[in-house]
Length: 84
Image (cartoon, rainbow, N blue to C red; front, side):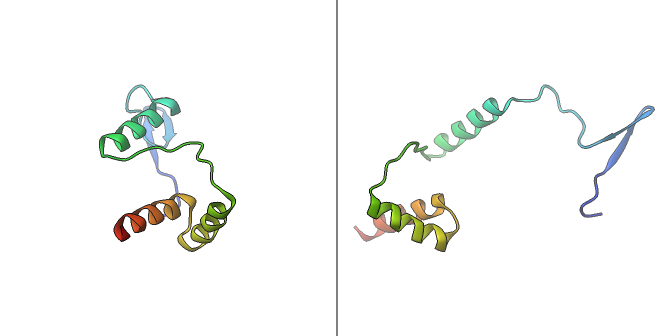
């Protein structure tokens, strides 16, 4: 049944999707929870990082090879740490 939505019967009404689990969280609340979990596990959040033209070119090359800017930055940081 891949790709088909499941339906459940609630009285006289057929409802699609998951049942309500209580008060839904806003996207801000979900984002804050994800950030808190990341920080608690030792991660960091970088925002508005400015790169030189050479670094930006290197990021493009690594991003194309690794699939995303985030993967490229993480790879470069971990590799650099291992070589020093």
